[in-house]
Length: 216
Image 1 (spheres, rainbow, N blue to C red):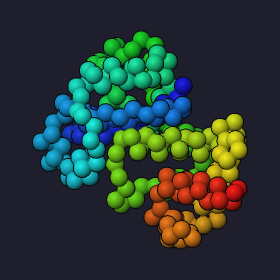
Image 2 (tube, rainbow, N blue to C red):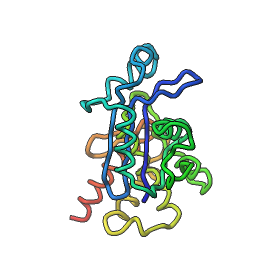
Image 3 (cartoon, rainbow, N blue to C red):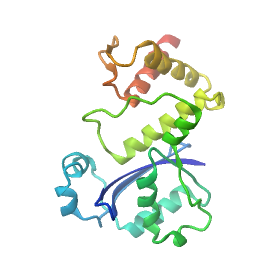
């Protein structure tokens, strides 16, 4: 089963110190945890992590790295297929919960698939999602990662993941992406803005509601 991951961390060029991790499964299950072991002072002093990441950690009770590692293994099982978006640091942050590479669960892959690399390989145009002020919460970003993967897979004709309303949603998003021209601020009847300053997941959710209305 595919699992889509995202992490928040503080790093100094030598160490990737896990702050939080979000995981979303193909079966819609979700996991989120905050570490109790990261260097809080270093995180507060970081000009990105301090003001942007820390305020969005939510109400999760922090846990030890060992507990998070055990819970993730129970959550994903023995034969997961991991995906992340720009996966390099996320994958290291996850793996190091278990210690050195040789201590990864023995049935797990020793690599993570990358949604951005997948996009490049199949020639799908970039998503215009990285905008100023976009929340950096690991669970939300894991959900976004899953949505991006599914969009790319749909572009490649894997319509098995889009049945019924799913195909209508995909069509709705393509209208937003292609007809509502990128590079402009674009307005829809419900008062949301898309285009260069839009957010992929908001566009996706709007297309769901829009296509539901059309089907009603």
